[in-house]
Length: 178
Image (cartoon, rainbow, N blue to C red):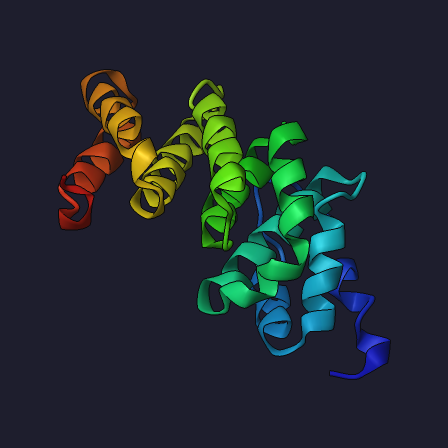
């Protein structure tokens, strides 16, 4: 991908509504191949334009599924953004990305606390992704398991249908047993 194409990473995410992912899949594919495009997507997560923020987060999350190392240079920024971001579409993508980071014990505790707050979000999707993130963090940091177990059990009892289904699946995870 030539240098002149880099600005197109965010340009192709413009327009339309938050109900559409637009060209996020195309941007994700370009970001998998070119770290400069990924960097532009990360910048887009702070855009004034809510559509660009959402689509940049979507594309960055998709690109990092197959290569979590793309996220490493942006660890501090992602940890900060997850605490301040209120847009639901960005929050659920952060809940997918942050557990992919190599986190210190302190960073993991801070991320876990932020995702615990996501459980109070008005969006069921954010709450469901938060359960997944809490589970993933607890797998790597055993001191978080007891409280995560309680949160998952609570979600099975009183969560939305999506939360109940996800919590049941996470509770059945053989790696999560004690």
